[in-house]
Image 1 (cartoon, rainbow, N blue to C red):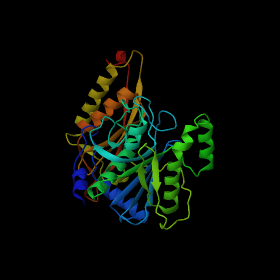
Image 2 (image 1 turned 45 degrees about the vertical axis):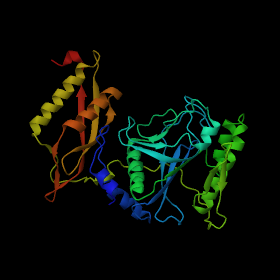
Image 3 (image 1 turned 60 degrees about the vertical axis):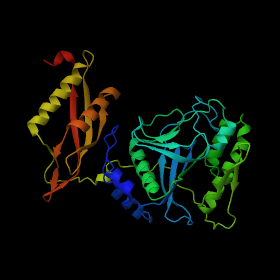
Image 4 (image 1 turned 120 degrees about the vertical axis):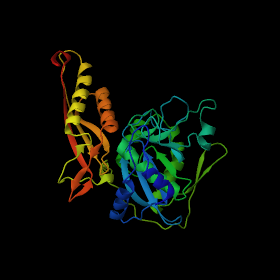
Length: 367
């Protein structure tokens, strides 16, 4: 495994406590199922604002064409169609970028920075405040970035980190307003931008780059003219592929896949301090949270989490009930305070998923 991948696999991010352990095995299995070679030495990302989709393409040789790996859902967007031109416009950029930052300690779970404003943006955008800090990140919130769910972001971050460790310093990210050869998308786009004739000229090189990649699965060279316009230099000798419409449904991500949890075990996990200690811990947590409820209020929560084969609590998630503030507290407590004797199967420790119900009752009912 590459040095950076080894480093990632053995560490956790302070903001999330989420370990990358097992991610390599999970991705290797998925690559193999799709006839791809792991690890990917070259990664290309492209995103589509109208469809709210992000694609990852991979290859292992500089001259070979890219191969489609997976499509992910961009879980929120902001602004309108067209390029980003100034700070505070909430626009997601459109154009040709690359990853210039890996931030494992982002306030938004994990983050991959993009080089906005690029040389073209610097010519076309507000000269004083063009804006910046554009990322692909987790937490599913945005004011001009490309937000993903945390589980998707874990995979994207690891995949691109490994490519970087394999020597790919330039990981391209192309952001398009829509899929230019999808008739339904084009009709929706034209309806939404009927008054924006300026976008026709801006989209011309984007369409050229999109069409060249669709036909060849190779990237054109992007040249930025003195005035900030894009020029797309295409290799006329690149072999062509028949175009294939991709299924635009979201690829589902199993956040537990990296740990290969067992559904049936011979012995379930037990808290290291004993079952009675777990019951006392649950009682104290329930009491604290219940004391913060309004009068005559009760609440039910169901927490799903994974106990890995080392006995650590992973990916706690309130899947039923609660509210944002209470759920955050519960998930953090489970993550940081619960350490287990792991589940056993055939005498060996294994990872397994767990469910825990929590009932919160109004303050006047506590006594």
